[in-house]
Length: 327
Image (cartoon, rainbow, N blue to C red; front, side, top):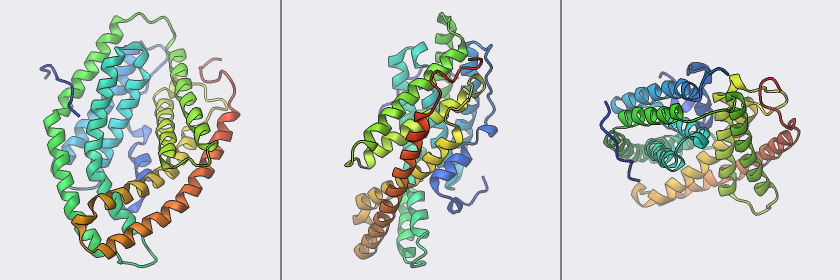
C-alpha cells in the first residue's frame, strides 16, 4: 500500500529454540516496555506514555534489521507495530477516525513487510522440527535460505523508503495534538474499561461464529486470534486502570494465542511453500514438506478448537460490569 504523505518532521536467543507464537510472547514482555499509565493522567499524557516507548522499540528494531540478518529483528519489529495498531484502535473514539484507520494501515503495511522475512524463518524452523526423519529437509532448507535473503532485502528497502521512524514520530505528535484539543469528561478508567469491553464483544462474536459453525475453517480461527490479541494488548495497556476481578487474564489469552499462533505458523508456511514451489526444485521434497505440514495442521486444528471452547466458557462467567477500578 502507499503510505500516507508525511510532513517534514524531524538479542541472543536462538530462533529455533521456540515456536514463533511463544517467541512473540517473550519478545512482547510487558515488564520490559515501561510506559505505565495512571488514572489521573489526561488521555494525551496516557497515550504518550504508552506510545513513546513503543516508538523507541520501532527505532531499535529497524536499526537491528538494517545491520543484522538474524531472525529476531523482523519478528520483534512486527510485534511492536501490531501493538501500535491496537493502541491506535483503543483511542479511535477520541481522534479523527478516518485518519486513524489510514495510519493503522500504514503500521500494518510495515508489519507485513517485516513479516515477509519472518515467514521464511518460521517455515525453516517447522521443517527442522521434523524429528521422525532428521535432516530430511536439509537440502530444502538451504534453498529456503536464499529466498529468505531476498525477502530480507525487500523488507529493508520498504521500511527505508517509508522513513518509518520519522513517520511514527509525526503520527504520535498528531494524535497527542488531537487529544489535547478535545473535551474529555469521562474518567480515563471508564474509557479504558469501555474499550476493553468493546474488544471483548468482538472476540465473543467471533468465538460464537466458529463454535456454532461445524464447517468453520482456518479463516474464522484467524479472526478469533486477531480479536484475542487485541483484547490482550488492551488489557496490558490499561492494566493499572482496570479491576481484574473475575475477568479473563492476559495469561489465559496468551495460552489461546500460543495455540492459534502455532496453527497460523503451519498454515502460513504451507501457503509459502505452495506459492514458491516452482522456485525450489525437487518437487518430491517440496511435496513431502507440504504433506508434513498438513499432518501437523490437522493436529493443531483439534487443539485450537479445544482452546476456543475453554475460552468461550471462561468469558461466559465474567462478572457483568466488571473492569473499572473502584466498581
